[in-house]
Image (cartoon, rainbow, N blue to C red; front, side, top):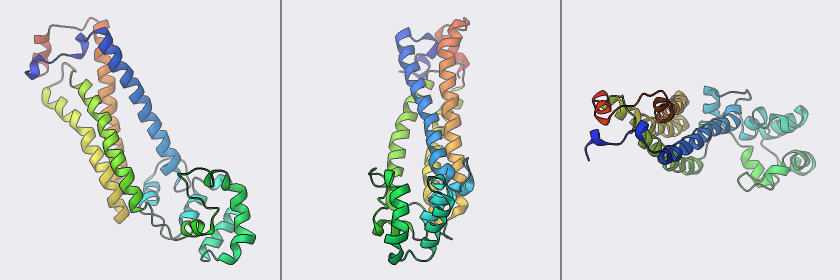
Length: 254
């Protein structure tokens, strides 16, 4: 089948438009929720709301002047205990996390303020155990290699699958030069590779943290453009009477 004879968004049947629209709406909401999730995890790594370069550095390279425990108590876990309790935990970590202080001083704080999540949610480290807490109290070297590997392959497979269908729908857009359309479709995949690669590069050198932000914004903007363009051409253009025969759209899209 020649590219010029491909079906276009304005001329799709109502049922196919409904199918594509449902996918676009759910995917759009999913992308927004992903942004919220990033803000709630990486966005508080430096103790301040909002995603910054420091957040990226702390998440992947680590804060090598302190422990993971200290980073969390200054960041997303700051409000889970009182300032005095946080200070007690931080001092314990800085002093080498001595076992002699675990039972009388540290464990009661952990049991009262941390156990509700860390002792019952399997994805969180069970810091009610001394051995686990001692690991968390070590110098923060950022994301573990095993965690990066797991998240990277899930990220690449899962998001690439989403971008495939977004690009597939957008490939039926009309009035856009073919080479421009092809570039736009490829952009999210390119920025996804940059995004994931930058996690590993930042793990080695914090200077690459900027690439994480660039990669995320790059594929988000390209995806948003394709989603909104597809919705516009499926529903607004026919409503405005901006439809034409297939040959006209082929000429405009060359």
